[in-house]
Length: 149
Image 1 (tube, rainbow, N blue to C red):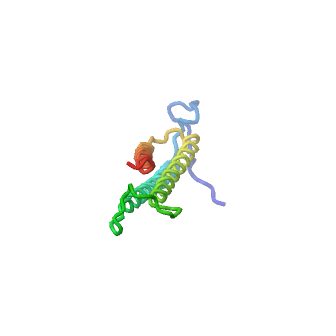
Image 2 (image 1 turned 90 degrees about the horizontal axis):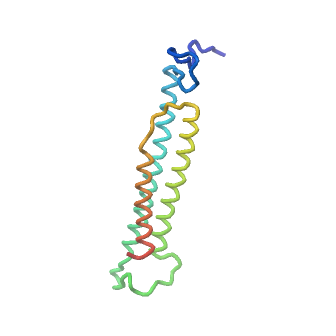
Image 3 (image 1 turned 90 degrees about the vertical axis):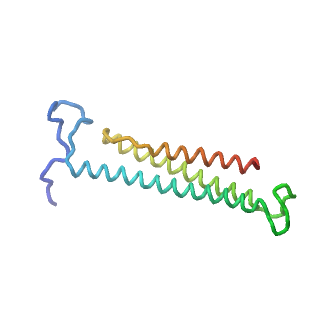
C-alpha cells in the first residue's frame, strides 16, 4: 500500500481547537466532493427531463386522440369499449412522470443530506426549485386531463 503524503484534512490554521466543520480540506478532496455533488445534480436533471417527457407525452396523446376526425366523434361522444382509452393512457403517463420525479427528488435530497452531514460547507443548489416547478406543472396537467378541461 502506498501512503498519502498530504493530509486529507487539516484543522483550521486560525483556530486549531475549532470543530470539524471548519476543517481545511486538501484540493483533491474538495474536488472529489464537488464532483459528487455535481453528479447528484446531473442525475436529478436527467430525472426531471425524463419526467417532463412523460408528462408532455401523456398530455399530447390525450389531446391528440380526444378528437377523432376519421369517424367524426369528439370528446363528448359516448366512451369507447376499450379498457385503455386516450384519457386513461394520458393519466397513466402523466402519473408515471410525476411518480418518477418525486422518487428522484427524494433520492437526491437523501444523497445531498448524507454528503452535507460529512461536509457542511456544500453550496446550495436551485435544482429543487426546478423540480418543484415541473411537479406543479405536471400536477396541473394531471388535473386538466382528469377533469376533462
